[in-house]
Image (cartoon, rainbow, N blue to C red):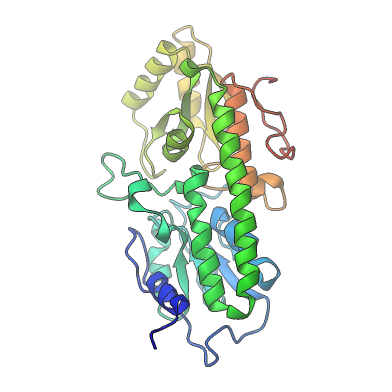
Length: 336
């Protein structure tokens, strides 16, 4: 007889299956064909957005250790000796992929030789990925900004956990379906909210190009001062171009990011002021990191609810002050 479908799937997921920025992936063998350790299963996640999927799908069977917390920029993050020990001490590891964790790639490759390591973006169709000009053939890694695209990552996590721990596969399937339903509601909220912004005001200017998927999904003209990686420097020419855009389009608000210094956004505000145009800082968006652990904004749903609500209200649209689920601590923007 042929191999079971689940075995074939995990081999496809775990043997370096091709997405840019992927690390080779090798499942941990087990005499019983499934997880044979103690519970909860110790899973390591690189960034909050990945960790939140694993927590939501894994439920009580999984204990997640997240390497990068609130306000940490994954583009610049370097794995410490403690990080390596943490990863090696886990039963499996999940990361975003698409070179988001660029400086951690070597560490993930080494770890994948001895334990399961999964890139959650593996199943996203390449036709759905953005390849910015000048990116040297690398895709934009900020896929979580499009809730409908990021929901595909739930399938990877659900399949990986079910293969690692077949005994609780039904639980993982149920949790994954419940989480996908939450994401569907969030995506629909985003479409409705952003559509309420006057069309001429749908311009989103942020610190760096983390919001291109956000703009494509919800209908905004997105402009970043820096490129898709915060390693790039913002030049005076780029700042002047954006000041021209702000004045010419009568942009009412620009946005800082929680994981990126705000100096470039302050330069835009000052540049517009020098040309007798007042533009406000509409608030702080979550880009490469979620909010503080233990808060609503410290979940993926809360992070995107915050961004969608804040942008809508600051640019003149209509959204409830406390967001989709009435749990936002503050949304800023106008009193819509």
